[in-house]
Amino acid sequence: MPDTPIRNVVIIGSGPAGLTAALYAARADLEPLVIEGQAAGGQLMQTTEVENFPGFPDGRMGPELMMDFRKQAEKFGTEFLTRDVDAVDLTSGSPFAITVGADTILARTVIISTGATARWLGLPNEQRLIGKGVSACATCDGFFFRDRELVVVGGGDSAMEEAMFLTKFASKVTVIHRRDQLRASKIMADRAMANEKIVFEWNSEVVDVLGDDVVTGVVLADTRTGERREMAADGLFLAIGHDPASGLFADQLETDSQGYLVVTEPTTATSIPGVFAAGDITDTIYRQAITAAGQGCKAAIDAERWLEASH
Ligand code: NAP
Image (tube, rainbow, N blue to C red):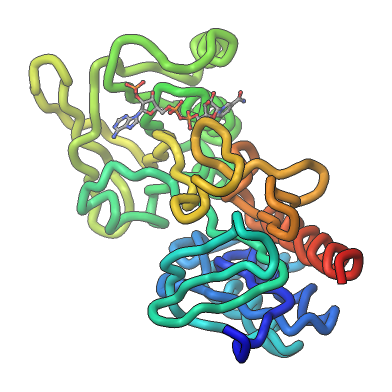
């Protein structure tokens, strides 16, 4: 492909990590291209009020915040392609080939910021009430539930952590687990069980979420007998795991056992020189817009320095 121009930086993914990487790369005159995907903007596009992104004392709506991230990156020359990536060839080295439909884009460096998605139960009323009492992020939304009664679904470390965090605000937190044994580590399970605000409902699953405009309760089913009952609740927090969007890259880059891309901390370098990763695709711990944005900034600086050193 002798006539195909080679991009300095191609960023795959357009949440806080990707758009911050774009802003920094654009201001470094690297003329980045963001392949933003058909569902652009990342997880904040499904969020209502964001109160913990510094600089906005009155909070911002998630989609508005992401539109501003995008505008700011565009202002300094970022180009956007609103398509999904079909394939990448990273193992042949820089310049890397990125396939989008019938087109091949060549890039000296690639920043991967495709994020992760929280797992949901997939119930219609759960999806309808996201942001209206249904959440997959206690750190983000716990604050809205002072003196309320909450339900957390899951039996792993995340569920224990979310339940304990929520007891700072809530008057009572009920952990709903589908088995009679937790998956969580013993230390986390012991801590949660010792917390007097936390109660456990074993062998139970949430089969429906109640409420017209906001959550008012859940319907539980006993996983052994199928028997159903209603439980009043002001909020439902899902903590049943996350899925990193690493399918396109997982067989080419080093990943952990759950499929998250491994980077050489404190940098954003992946296992292939010239390929960097930022945001929730690398993050099994923090998963915040601000941490993703910070890592996106690091990725752009890493890419800039790598380009300087190798050309
Ligand atoms: P996880 O360990 O995979 O646990 C997911 C939990 O959700 C399991 O208890 C599972 O039930 C339940 N679950 C999954 N799908 C469900 C469904 N459709 N309906 C009802 N329940 C469902 O995920 P995680 O808790 O997010 O943790 C992920 C990793 O991060 C783990 O390695 C964990 O140790 C780590 N982590 C560590 C910390 C910490 O140490 N501070 C904090 C958070 C996470 P079953 O048990 O029946 O499968």
